[in-house]
Image (cartoon, rainbow, N blue to C red; front, side, top):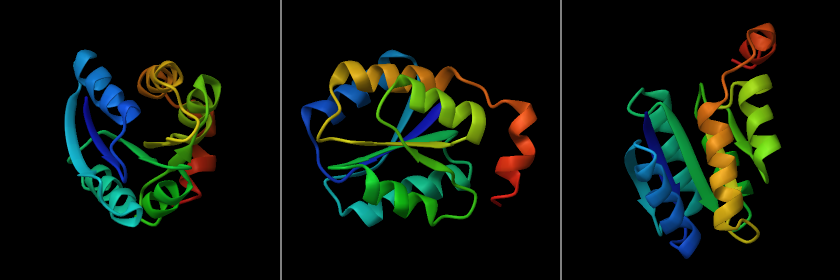
Length: 135
């Protein structure tokens, strides 16, 4: 799977996430690193919306800014997640295509758990009408 990745701040967690995605065999497309959060969110969103990436992962201090910026791109459903269950639900019930998380509170272990859930959970087809209504 091709994963667009961006962060407004390079940290040990962001380095870990990039390494983990590559270890799992995904093609990593780094859209931005150490750039302003609006550019990171928009850039990852645009890569996913245009089909250059299958899914996206964005990070900033709280995760809020990058998720808002990504969601401004038509066709993007970015979910700000804090744990495995939230990331799994975002995929299952909302067909989220961009995972957002905050660097302040996310450990490498929690990041791994969220990535696993986000990248292996399929959308629940019975929810398709709901997320299609979002456009």
